[in-house]
Amino acid sequence: MNGVNWKVPVKLAPQPVAAKDSLGLRLDGWKEIAGHLGRSTRCAQRWEKSLGLPVHRIRHVDGCTVYADAKELDAWRRSRDDVALPSQPMAERERVITAQPTRWSASILSLCRLFLKAVPARTERS
Image 1 (cartoon, one colour):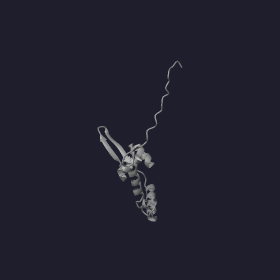
Image 2 (tube, rainbow, N blue to C red; image 1 turned 90 degrees about the vertical axis):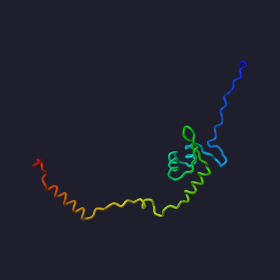
Image 3 (spheres, one colour; image 1 turned 135 degrees about the horizontal axis):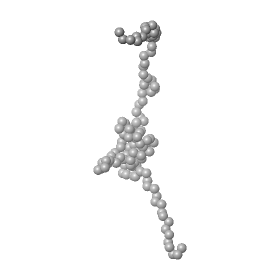
Image 4 (spheres, rainbow, N blue to C red; image 1 turned 180 degrees about the horizontal axis):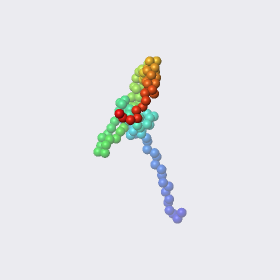
């Protein structure tokens, strides 16, 4: 076409999800960490605070950047799988014991109801 060389735009290859570092596969950010664990980002953050999920931070002026090593996460998960669980099922451990009404308490309650019905309600103050 009139000697014009039209160049077709080239699509760039997508960036790898995680970068390789000296330790292994580096996961940058909560989304990648959670994706590696198969959980939500909120769950991964909760696991860091309560269960000691191995996460690293790079501090900078605006705050910090979170990253983790995939090998460390896998080792952490294996160590968590080895934790012995209690022998009792969860329902039995968390059962709340409530007071059951006895025959006497039901009888006393019935008497109170009868008494309250028999006593006339006062309409005026004396």
